Length: 200
Length: 93
Image 1: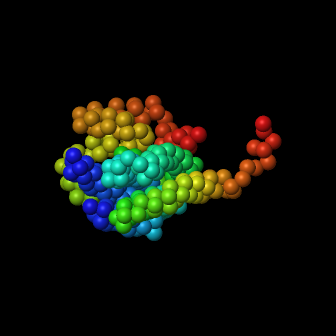
Image 2 (image 1 turned 120 degrees about the horizontal axis):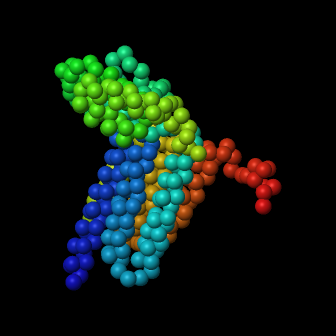
Image 3 (image 1 turned 90 degrees about the vertical axis):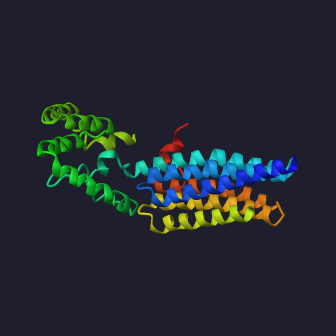
């Protein structure tokens, strides 16, 4: 019986350690503040939770276990509060999240979806998309030019849903350009006001 | 077992310190500071168990409360520019 509890607490503590390291790696490698908060949430909830649960199994039933329970409760309440306040403060400072269309390589000669001066792409994005960019460039060379223009038209509209719809339209070929333009007209100025409308 | 947990938390601390040093915005640094505080609580608790003296947990509890209050205070400072209310908020019921 004792050894069962021991092995279980061993498993819990090792699992918690793994989650803590995973959350910290995410904190370094994620591209912007909101995704980094998502990564820190892993180590705050599952990492700390598993570690404390393992220590509770080691401590047995008593005052020490109660203190660990209080610690767990503090983590449980303080982590969402901090994340909420941090996200709201970041939005208040007009730091905008990176969307799907921002991660695409910019079209040659076309306008960027948003101003690149505001967000400096951190180093985490340098490594991984390098291969993807080469693959996409090769892909763009083989496809006709109309598809490329349709993609840039949809990139302006703003939301990821429309962008993915635009991709399917672009796959259809030259007719995709017309539908993409129509969508663009319908949404109007989706690009400049998107960030301002979101923060209130 | 506790040594492995302490090693993992130390690695996480170093990674969070990297983000705190090179974070592009102030909020990245603040997030990293909060993460460092949480990891410090964990390391204090695990170290108490490693040395067989779980009284370190009291230190961890106090540090958890201080971490929450410190992060919220700094966030409020950057949001409103000060830590108090302005005159309009005070006149309201």
